[in-house]
Structure formats: C-alpha cells, structure tokens
Amino acid sequence: MSTPAPTLLTRWQTARIGEAQCIGCFRCVPVCPEAAILGAARHTHTVIQSLCTGCAHCLEACPVDCITLHPTAHLCAPVALGVPA
Image 1 (tube, helix red, strand yellow):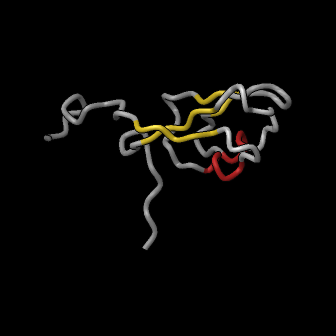
Image 2 (cartoon, rainbow, N blue to C red):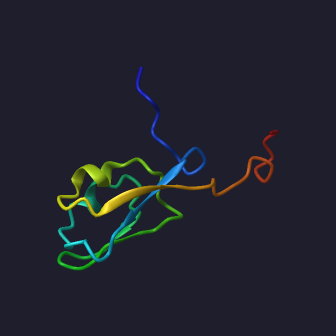
C-alpha cells in the first residue's frame, strides 16, 4: 500500500530553493504537481510556500541539490476548518 500524496492540510514540510545555488535549469518546475515553483530558464527559481505540499518531487529533479525541505505548520488549524480536534 502506497502512502497518499501530501496535501495542503496534511503537509509537514515545504520546499525551499537556495537562490545562490540555483542554476535556473528549470527541471524542478514541470515535476511540481501543484505548480508551486516559479522561474524561467537560466534564472533563479522560487517556491510559493502557500502552494507547496512538500511532495519532494523537485528534490529528485534538481541536479545541483539546491532544494531543501523544511518543517512547517499547517496552513489551517483543524478548529478553523470546523473539524473537531
């Protein structure tokens, strides 16, 4: 049984791109299932934190290992969604 893909409500990490190390290869952009990475070829890329689910597909695509995962809090607390804690 495979682990379900993370969502904005279940994520526990998000990606960040080390802008000083990014070579603008564009390999991370098409593999992101949430379209959370912005950038143009040969230019530094960035992750839109509010869209990133922490799936780590971008890490596998990056040839220079400039993408790292960082722990994050959920965007919405269960109480705010009307879900009992």
